[in-house]
Length: 297
Image (cartoon, rainbow, N blue to C red):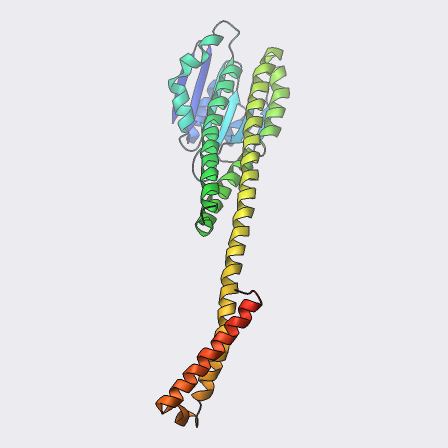
């Protein structure tokens, strides 16, 4: 499906899971290189930026939806911008609805497709900002619960947060390299004046990257603290169980001895039963006293 928008002299074509026929027609209209035509028809796990004679082609992945981060292909011409993706991207849909207002301040300043690309990238980074804010709030909630004896319940929550942070880290990992390469190409393609917008995009990425790094550091501290508290709590539990085993081991031994064949006559009378019971209680008291003296309890 192709959605086409026009602003002044710029055409924006947004492709969602395009067919071969749609890509072929688009390639003929905008004289796209055959390599670009092939790239638009199949997803790629690699990010890249290439400069062709009349356009710039780049591929980036954005962690803005659940699951695998969607790939978005960009084709930047002088007076056209093509975006292609294999699933709906809410940010692009929302941006298309406010396109006129977003670019109004550029109407008399040599507007070209690079300016439109700047606003598109900014809109694509915005959901990542929102996601990072949400993760930061979750980390604060985890911190509160860790120190209210809910360490075990937080193990799964921390694992889920870590997975989301790792997805963000890996999805954004190569953005810096691609954007820096685009900065070099973009200066030649659009002129020196466009350098400001490319620097703004890189700054936006760097800010998001630092936020991801900060959240991962907070996660690491909380994870280590949670593991330490769990270890202490488990150690205390094992200590109690060990002391109980120490106290009742003689009791079990006495019970086993008097239950052996030939010992039944001792406990058949009431006085014998009381004697054995008293012996077991005495043994338990002695062992408990020893444990207390050793400061095990």
